[in-house]
Length: 402
Image 1 (cartoon, rainbow, N blue to C red):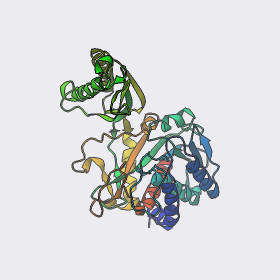
Image 2 (image 1 turned 180 degrees about the vertical axis):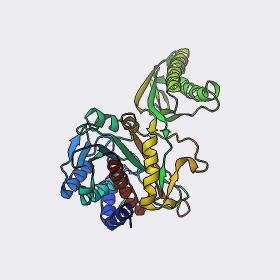
Image 3 (image 1 turned 60 degrees about the horizontal axis):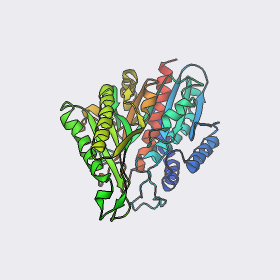
Image 4 (image 1 turned 90 degrees about the vertical axis):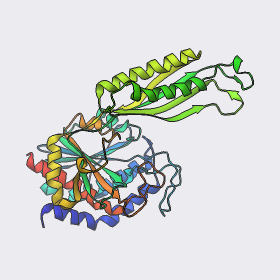
């Protein structure tokens, strides 16, 4: 048995402990930077293992292990949930109107599992492993906050990785997917478009200035950017997910608001589309005697996988989980470009890194609900695979870069 296989075996032995941790996190989800319970749990677990964790930024946690010499490899796990009412039959389902519907409870658990395994292999660490427990991934603010707070320094980080669960794939749970080199996930910009009119009684629209009509027209015009202004093969997803106006049926409201996301792989196209969104919103609003204000909120650049770290993952991971359980994203049928986004992208622009996927809900065995769905259920059998992948990647990379 090689060292990597031994690490997986050790990870499987602590699976019951990881399941308990994951269920505690799943039952008590928290969102954004408001992660009091989650952060306290992470700090408690790390201290019990013998770490000296530190808070980083608004709600992040950092811990290091190793001899403090040579290079540093970063392992990242995000901690936040979504404002979704859970609709599962799990005994440990959440009941507070929030849900770990993107698997961040498993990400945090796997990183804690990796922390425990690393303690058992501390003498073998040829450098430093830095553990990054990140808040606010879902609102695209957590990674940049931790970077500003110095997560990539003291000691300086030389390379890193993250894992994200991927439900609904027709493959064995625990299969690791290595994302392609170069741009692996799209950029993302969250936006709001607020239209200002003049409220009035529904029986006298001529005495009001209705913001709903221009808002509806702005929505339709935004959808035409992709079909009429961009090349047919442009990798763009412009989505309006919220439309709010008024609160009663017989009153014309003063304002209407659209909220959505813009995703693309092309930086120049990203700038162009944002400019056109402003032009379209302002001109249509003006035509209807209204005023429009376009606000671009949080966002993230494209996530970039470093070729050398990708090749390292492709070489090391088969020894951890078996060659049949390591698949390249590019080999998956009908996947196309991944228009999802990750604020780990900020990290990927600072250090060489790789995104790994982890098959977590075999669509051949159960209903293939996607992430962000209130009925999502993930397999807990994946936890040892993620923890072992973290540890093996860190130990092997540091060993080869002394």
